[in-house]
Image 1: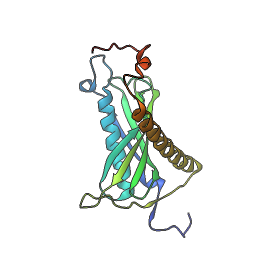
Image 2: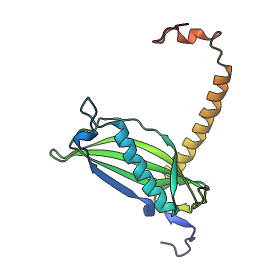
Image 3: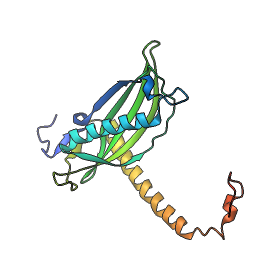
Amino acid sequence: MSSSLRPDFRLVSHSRVTLTELMIPSYANLGGKIHGGILLSLMDKVAYAAAAKHAGTYCVTVSVDGVNFLQPVEVGELVSLLASVNYVGRTSLVIGIKVIAEDVRTGTVKHTNTCYFTMVAKDDNGRPTPVPGLLLETPDDTRRFMEAIKRKELKTQYSVEFDNARSRLAVAQQADLLRNENCQLGY
């Protein structure tokens, strides 16, 4: 490790956090699978832990991206959420989270989702506060940082395009959009 590391930068490894929890029957929905809301709550907790470790202060969730439940989580499985800071801005941090579920009886491990939480660091008065820079330790850290930049660009582009499309959307003139959809006008 270089002795010229700036003190206002922290290693990616400094923020790595793993949260593991047993999925119990009270977490299940009527279909017998674990509620998505339970998993989202765990993701929010691990995102906070990683962000707060890096920032050294209280952090709040401002957005969640890419929460796609790829496989169901079953009662009795151990769910592990692996989180680290992937990107930092001036006051914001993007936390990458990988969720895996393990059936301890069979040893089967499945990747249930990967998602990204954007957090903002807050000072004691609740105002956004600057965060330390991120010292990228590996090519994977660099790739994740660059992917976060690209996601941010695409998210901004999508937001602008959607706002433009929404402002041009006139229900009376564009009702043909509903032609092949599973809806019916009731007015």
